[in-house]
Each structure stands twice: as structure tokens, then as C-alpha cells.
Image (cartoon, rainbow, N blue to C red; front, side, top):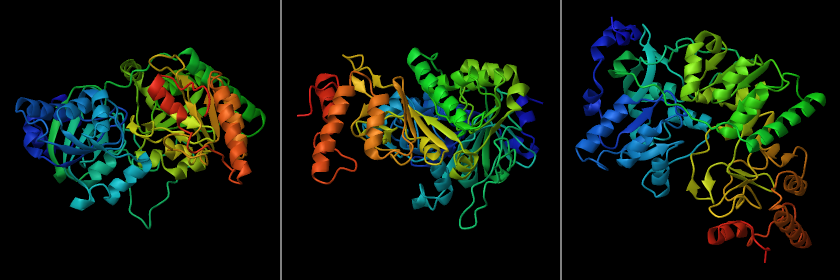
Length: 519
């Protein structure tokens, strides 16, 4: 028996095995497609690439366009290829890739953005495809197997795969035989409809309340295709000095909170976003003083393996193993030791406010910018250029025991190594309001905003977080705004409304935010 057939334990489905190119007739222009995949792991590969080859070879660019509903980002080799060939019309709710990002920002791709736990829920409610009555024409799922009852054994991510399987008219399943079976790693809970939804009865990070596989009607499966393309993963540069300084501020803060009795000695469950700063924070924890730590998060990056190896990480819950290629090799080489302490859950469950608040999660995420009152922008440069999407950061920040955002204080422009300040008078787009954030951190220091009024917050942020090149500029803005607004009895959160974006204007005109004054 072939490896593929052995992974399909429902024998009647063997008759639906076909080559990737044989699935082309299932696709029609304008279809709503639901896919598995999350940052970028567990996404279908061979069927989308076969369809892209077909479009290119038959000069159908822009004539076969689809609406894509995926858990989050997928591999750029698929995402950017489809965008380049004009195959992506709508794209929800998060993307990474130079080509697709360009297409989103030039208007070629219609992207929508949403908090991920709400996005997953709303898929089942039928909000995104309400014109066709809800659901998807076709679902594409990467799996590591199919059980005897036809239920789907997912791979290294869950994301919205359960919702796609639940709400697709037809399904194409890619069985990836290049990776181990992930059977046993998942805790699947299907989304229910209100008003009688059941609570998530989770009181510990390692609780399991669902099933190991995703229920599936076998009659919906129209094709099964073998894949031997492993996930490319998320490559990350080694932590730099700036990231390590940010991590050190956070670790010092944790130690102070433990000493004050506001955190237990093993902390509370940690959530860490994606990127080099998040990786550095987890790396710092692997070498830090805390042991018996638990993680309730969205993605597990490479330094989580270091955290396990240190003996200080007890258990980790996530929706995706967002590892690099070397990280996956480490995982597969010591499979039982790592996976015995990991569970993967659907995004509407891993990011749901209920367990996040009940467990007392400590949330740590990176914005594009934040302002002197504590509003943060995660998505839109200068208020209009989409980067990737909000992802799940808002799910955690709004509901956590501690909401922490960490960022460099500056970024380089083309002509100035500190030409862009990541702390501005007023965020050009607000994804996370001042009401949601407790702690802001840069390599300059940490601002503890708990219990502070807006003007007190501004003083703390300017003093602790702003780069020295910009501190006088920001201090002048705040003092002048406070004086002018308080004189007019409008000074609760003072702004010079018609000058507030002068730094951004100066950057566009002169390549740096370093203005001379506010006149």
C-alpha cells in the first residue's frame, strides 16, 4: 500500500485520488474559495500551483479570478503567484508577500481585514459570502490524513480549516506525505450558532475540550491529491541588539511584577506575536529566571523550541507551528518530546476572549507605530498603505491580564538612520485604542500606563519610549497642545488638530520626521 493510501483510512475515498492537474475543472471564475493555512503553514500547495500553471499556459491572466478566505498568510510561492496572474480578487483577512501587498495597495486585490477570532466566527455566520447564502463553493485543505469516519486530520496549523470544511459545498484535500502525521496534536471545537453557544471550558493551558479531527461529510470530498511539498516556514533573522534591549526591559518588568505580587513566580500564560522582536522576547525568557511557564498564543516560532529545550516552558497552546525550515527539522527530529507538550486549536478558540481573559494571558505584540496617548497602529502605514493585516493581536490585547506592545523607537528612512519615529503625536490609523494597552516598550525603556490619565500617559511615553532625537520635538508638541487646549477647556487629551501630522508630511517631503518646530 502506498504512503498516500495508508494516510486515507476511509477506503472508499481511495477512488477519489487524482493528480493536481485533474482538479482544474472544479474551478470556475468568480468562485468563493476557503483554504486552510496559517502564517504560512498547513496551506494547500500543489493544487493552487497547478491551477496557476494552467492559467499562465492558457493566457487566462485576469480571466479566472477567485475570492480567497484563508486563516491568515500562506506561502509567497502561492500567494504572490496568484496575485501576479490576476487570480486573486478578494482576499481575507491577512496576507504576506511583496506582490500581493502591492496589488492590495494599487487596488487590484480587494482585501478585507478583521480580528481573527471574529473573522473565523463570521465565516460560519455566512457574513462574507452572504450574496450566495453563506459558505464557499470549494474548500482546499492540506491534511496529514483522513480517519475511518471521513474526518480530517490536519497538519501544522488549524486556523479556519474547521470552518472551511464545515461550510464548503465541495472539498479538495491535499494529503502531505512529506511530513509526519500530526494526528493527536489538535483540539478541534466546531463553531456553533447563537443564541445557545457553549462556553469553552478551559481553565488550564493544557486542557482539551474537543476532538482530534475535524468532522467532515465524506460525500463533500470530490478530490484527494498527494502533496510532497513541505512548508517553507517563516525565516527569522537572529535577534539584534535593539530587540534584545526591548526583551530585557520586558523581563525586568516581569521580575518587578513578581516581586510586587502581581504575577506568580512562573508568570501567567504568555502570548507572543510574530517577528524578530517577539522571537527575541521568547529567547530572553528561555535564558531568564522564570520556570514552569505556559504559553497560550497564536503561533509558535523557533525560539519556542529553545524555550522547551531550556526546561522552563511547561506547555504551549497555539493555532500554528510557524517555524522556519530549520525549526521544522528540529521538531521532526525530536517529535515526541516536543509534541507531547503542544496542542493546536482553531483560531476562533485560541484567540477567543473567554479563555484569554480566564487564563490571564500576558499579550505581547508589535505595532507599526503608537502615539503619545497609547493608541497603536498595526496595519496601515500613514493611514492608508496596508502592510499585512491586524491578525490576532487585537483579540489578545483587548482581553489580556497585561497588554504589552513593543517596537523600535525609530526606523531608518532612505536618507536618515533614525528618520522615522515609531512614536508619533497621533497614530495615523488606530487598531488598538488607548483603552486596551497597559505597557509600551521600546529599546529606550518601558512605559507602564496602568492607572494613568491621558496627559500622564503622554508624559510617561515621551520620557520612557521616545528616541532622544525626537524627545524634544514630542515634548514641545505635548506642552503646546496642553497649554492651548486647556486654555479653551478642551484639554482632557490635548492635540493641535491641524498640525498633528506635520512629522509625516516632513518625512514625505524631506526624508525624515525631524521637523524644526511646530509652526
